[in-house]
Image 1: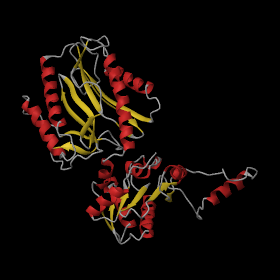
Image 2 (image 1 turned 120 degrees about the vertical axis):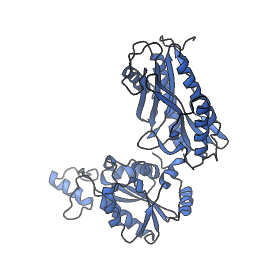
Image 3 (image 1 turned 180 degrees about the vertical axis):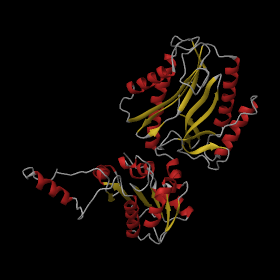
Image 4 (image 1 turned 180 degrees about the horizontal axis):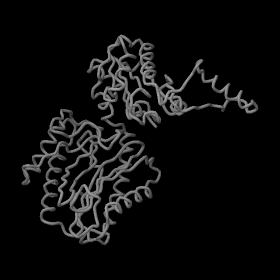
Length: 421
């Protein structure tokens, strides 16, 4: 893995926020800042198992709190040299540098002694959050930052862990870092864009396979299996770490779906995860000719998509994109249409949707290097699910649609091809 945190940009944003250092606690933030796997102790999404300290001054080195189980792998994969160990529940021993002819008891005793275990060492049930926070405090002191203003990724702290953080940081000026950690992940490096490009390319292979598998009688679970098989068969050398799909078949977009009948809508919203980065795009198909209502609603979504896509360029406020998109759909004859957001950033988040969102109240502006999912969905019980969604790279001159499949509502003849093909 490669760390993707830009220290110069981070320092600039911290200076704007009045911060002397940033403490990153989320698993995705840890991966982004360190370039290393955060390890199994983050599975509960409770803070304190791991952390990365990023000083605002790029001349000061970062520090990382890492579980002992993952420390060797961390040292091999991360650029961060200041590694502070927080033991977890898993017992380990390293015999690689010890003579093989020692008796088992002596061999293990020497291995544990080499780790520097203190007298009375005991492992926690999972991990000791207070110890993790204390290690960060020590790293701050070592850098002369204990008197500074420290921004903490409070969105990664549960109420249950807040007391341990406050106790460990007592006497320090800590504050909520707000959206700063996510803002740092918002603009992607070329390597991150490469992961997202690989992910959407593979996802479109899967979506095309689903399209070609639509037949009368097919069910949602059948198409989901086709999606998974196509992704697995075509992954190639891509570092595929996951895949997901939200497929609906027929008039109820929330039900199991199927067996498919002529006139049924098939909505395919799916993504692949490459090196932890998830794609997100979607298409709508219909078995046979679309009904006038289906065609009309999809055309309204296309009008909204065209209006919003025309604004996807550096400097455009996300709220402006939302307003234009919604206005176009309403102007197509549906003044009651309302949607909270028309897309979101893509990246390392725990789900398929990252901040920021293309919402009416969003004040953030698009920047080069952002990768967004731009979507216009409508889920109509009694008719089916409809969606138009592309993955979009914001460039210096505008935007690049990273998808290749057509956006139009595709009518399928049920024999593995679009009608008329």
